[in-house]
Image 1: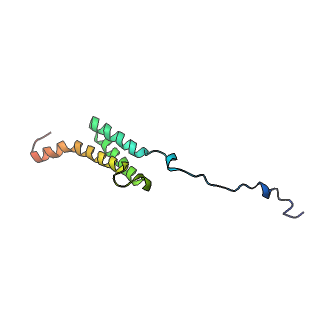
Image 2: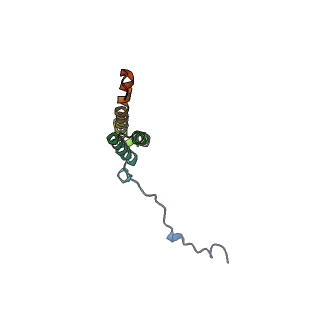
Image 3: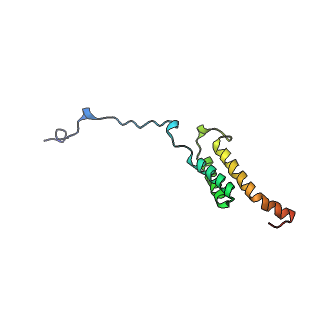
Amino acid sequence: MSASTSDPRRPDAIVEYRPEVKRIEDDDPDVPGFVSLVFAICGLMIRNRTCLWVGMIFSVESYLNQRASEGGLLGSPAATIIFSLSTLVMNYLPEILAIYSGVRI
């Protein structure tokens, strides 16, 4: 017997591979941006600097992982960086002002 007659594969049953088409709407939401806002708000409310710094790290991660279709600099990831930075400033500002005014906290 030859190799072609003993081949169990059928050429008429071959199905061509087509990769799945992904849409932008099907992608996961911006989880690092949401986590950043949650940590920034919690850190601001309970005055915990660790939460604020974790929120800042997540906001930078959200900014670095944004897609080109999400918008420019004024998009959501940039807003989370500005919000996280402002919460850090609001938390550290009383100590900075106390140092320059000479008052001990």
